Image 1 (cartoon, one colour):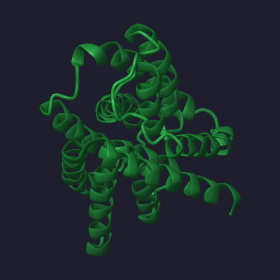
Image 2 (cartoon, one colour; image 1 turned 180 degrees about the vertical axis):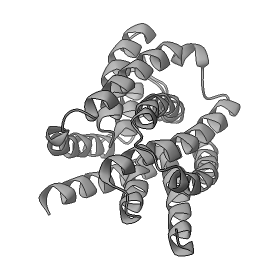
Image 3 (cartoon, helix red, strand yellow; image 1 turned 30 degrees about the vertical axis):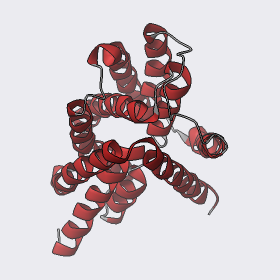
Image 4 (tube, rainbow, N blue to C red; image 1 turned 45 degrees about the horizontal axis):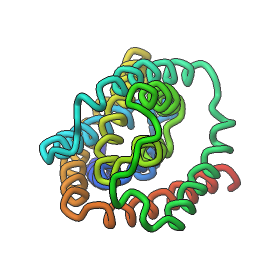
Length: 250
């Protein structure tokens, strides 16, 4: 790789890690960068999982040190998400995800509009609509499989599920989301590694950026809380909608 390519991949990893630690959606930056570097689509997705796993790990560590992760609360979700994400990644290698490409942008747009119209959403904890077991089975199986199979918007869906179904405040919902994201990233990464869909040289450059970006992003989210996360969250979701619709219609 040229020094220019190395520099671009490093800063793409740093930027993606920063955004991902706060609101998800880092793939908006990292996947295009990997494709620009000349990787085939499935290789780009596998390499993206490798590099994003490390940034998410750094974010989880930061949230956990701040006391925002209850391991007892997340453990069943982690198990179900892991199995479901592996299944989703296996299916990805076999069939197309073209239908999801058409549906997901509109689902994300609906979430963005809902958040914009609900300024108090996630500011304080609310009453849970599901118990931890039911939530783990529902969200872990559906969103775990989705992240392994397709991926865009997974963090958004997890955060909304944590707020709407578990009644978590936005900062804690973001911390829970990072643990779930880390789980599905690691599970699907196993499949990509076993099927030789990872470029380790490229991943190594981006991991260096991810570790810095993930730490910085989680620190900002913890320091500034729900109002800051909400702004980044809405911005990232709308950018993701625009990117997915652009890919679909242009």
